[in-house]
Image (cartoon, rainbow, N blue to C red; front, side, top):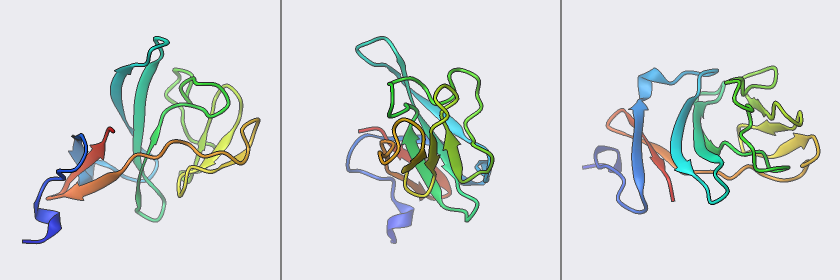
Length: 125
């Protein structure tokens, strides 16, 4: 059997959705509860324009607030750029690098994501 036939076993993994439900420009937001400051913590899972999966913590690197500020709008003009609605910071979905804004040069926290038997799985560790 190939690795693609077994669910992930290292770390804490959570199923997100069937792979065919994710397309470029559409995100799944996976709630992880609240942090010790009471701020909702979630992970954004999506697909780049090239078809590559990505998953990042939904927190701006400038201040620990959700990127969309509660609006549900995460993209900065194209499907390969995430935008902080509060600060205007722009992040590449390819690596989470901030290219513009007060936190330029920093990276969003990346989460591992993989597909097993056509199911998208997210590592929440």
